[in-house]
Image 1 (cartoon, rainbow, N blue to C red):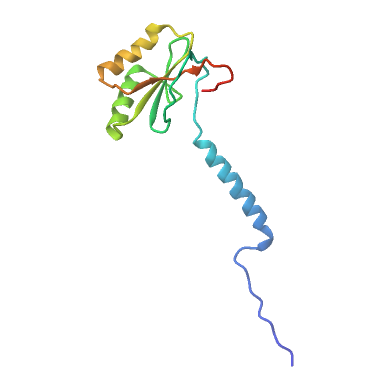
Image 2 (cartoon, helix red, strand yellow):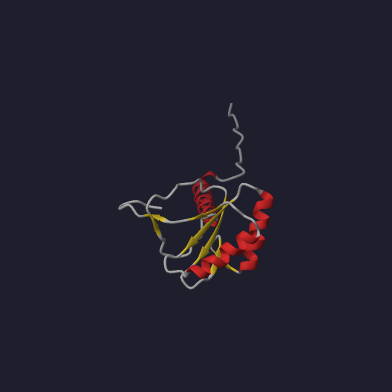
Length: 138
């Protein structure tokens, strides 16, 4: 007696699983690039004994050598910075402001930002510098 074997049909062809895995890998790589931190190309000032702080809950304000303002890596105006500071403080009162200025930036340009933060009565401001010790990083 001859037995008939019933053939099973797979919903996904198994010979194309490597293609699916490759496409999934590409998707994960693209999504991971979306969340990278944008930086402005500046020369950091140096400090003798910088204090290291937690960099998790902060708002970064960049001032380049020409005095242009950036908020978290995006070009902006002083008005936009003020709005972002108020919004960040409303969401999380422990938000720190990191002021990152180029070594060649005139103090008057940095003082404009400090004046705006002072008018907002924001007191948690830190200057980002490079350690003056040889071989030390940020």
